[in-house]
Image (spheres, helix red, strand yellow):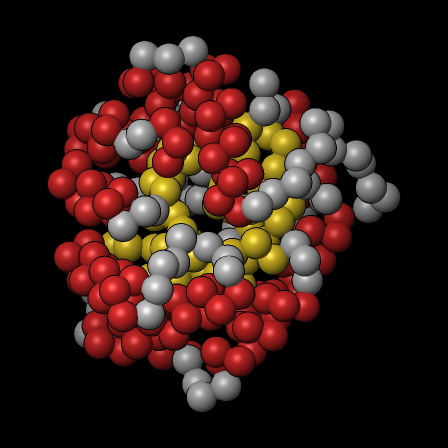
Length: 268
């Protein structure tokens, strides 16, 4: 059985001391590939150095909406240049909208649109962060696809309602579920996980955040995506192997991944 964790942040300091042990655990759990997200372009070299150590890692480059005030006249060119600089860059992001505490909503939209343009120009998917912003997100994406053209991507760490989920499925997006789907109070998230078609479903950890039950409250790590997959498989009443096979194929398709059955260890 193979699984892909489609959203990790291994460059965070909490992983610095035991990254090799973490990798051993994800391999034992059947995780054959990971997609490393990016919060801001300044992270790029650190993320690339992690991918140099573990060849089952692909990565993204982009600017998170909570960092959108860091956007300058040269940021778009920098993101595009970095994305072109390494064949392991498989996505733009994470980008999107976060209106939870934001007062810069229009600026976030502008920064998001600019990254959609980069993704379309490079024919790469976008990794979309959306918090308390689904109606605005729907509007921006629909307008972009109508006026500019199709862009593909994933609504990552999805916690939207079934109605919101249908919005983004109708726009052609994949939906990725994290450890949130295992939480007792996440009823609407589980309802959403039930309606996503087999060929649009992904799983992730978003580590080090949001560790699934039974690890809740601890540091999250890629091996725990197995718990997410087990929960979604039970919810959808399918064997774990079926769920793993489908989500792995979906990740390969979305991110255009070429994955070996058994990743080879590299000197570290």
